[in-house]
Image (cartoon, rainbow, N blue to C red; front, side, top):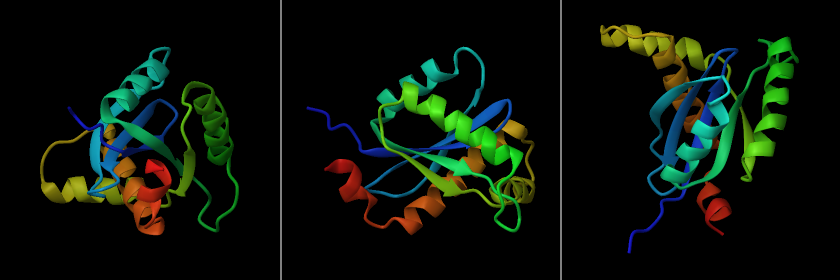
Length: 145
């Protein structure tokens, strides 16, 4: 009998694309998974990923200005999360995403291989998830109980 993993999914939400990363709560090693396009198929694709990966919680990158202030992008993410809650019956956590896209792009440049904006988004989601896991060391108990 196969055991369904207890995974956490992270989303780096942009205006057109959403970077997706995943980690099991046991291994706590986030990995980029995919970049989805925000269109009519988005929530169906996301629900499929949640089922396949055994996701127990979702983390959404939360943007703020450099001084921590609320921005237009903050409003957009709050609206996205309201929609997400209608489609995904799981705990949804917010995680500061400060500079994750810049760090992702720098890492991809350092690798010296070709990449696109989707690669940046998926890697940024990995950083968001890594930060979340570091700040929530007991998340395994929360999502498995």
